[in-house]
Length: 150
Image (cartoon, rainbow, N blue to C red; front, side, top):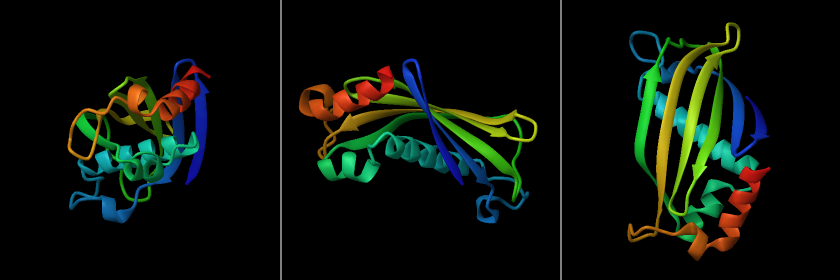
């Protein structure tokens, strides 16, 4: 798996070259539809790690819970075991209490889009109350904002 961070304008993106594992497929021999949300998580975690904000230490261990509040996935073509693909993850919005990501999975040999998705995440504390990142963790807010501005 190859990881590459791409920073442009007001968003940050990450590309990962990957291969479909047999265990990700269903009886029809294609990637099980819900598995794409796991791949989106992998992309999100890789992007945050590459900008110096590993999820576990940056959020979880600091009492910041990042919960999914919305997720969509559009399936355009199937992936099969051992197919190569590129997962591109982009941080598209950073707000005081939310962040949004977009995902595109393409087939490298044809550049055809196989899957597109979006997720919206809210920052909450351990009691499930909204967590204003800018107010309660200005150091983390500034680091995220700085990376997006580059």
